[in-house]
Amino acid sequence: MELIIIRHAVAEEREDFAKKGLEDQLRPLTLKGRKRMQKVCVRLRDYVKDFDVIVSSPLTRARQTAEIVSQIYYEKKVLEIPELVPQSPPQAFVKWLRTQGRNYKRIAIVGHEPHLSILASYMLSGKAESFIDLKKSGVISLELESFSHAEAGTAELIFSIPPKFLAD
Image (cartoon, rainbow, N blue to C red):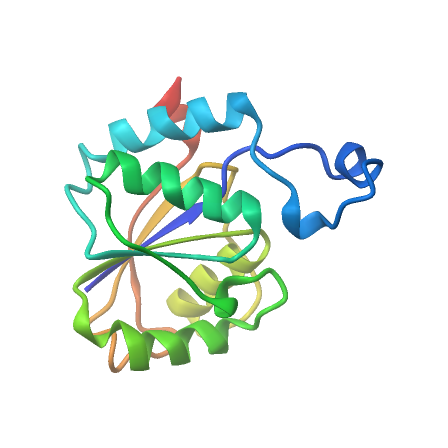
């Protein structure tokens, strides 16, 4: 089973968006962020031909990124789950993976930092402290023996690709 971890694309600056009086969860992608994510996805298809499903944080910037991934990957279904919000512990997503992921072979998830690098580190080492640097629009691929039996420390790193290698 393969878990593709994608950090959301470049969004509006937090401080500038806050001046509008809107909640951070509504902060959208920039035009530049959208275009770069499209390039990343087109090149990513050289490495990952397809997904069974795309799972996203419900925050606007992650959801918009997931929609771009879906468009490039033949309109794949996007599910929003609270287990991918920034404050969620990695154990929450592992529980989701065991119960909801068992019907899939390749899942793409879209979320935020530091949550995603902590999740990837947790899946690789069993420790919930990050040793991975995941840039905006960056992609990590992990291989697991089974989603239904996913456990911390059992994943293998297939690749970690910074966006500059896919979009520039």
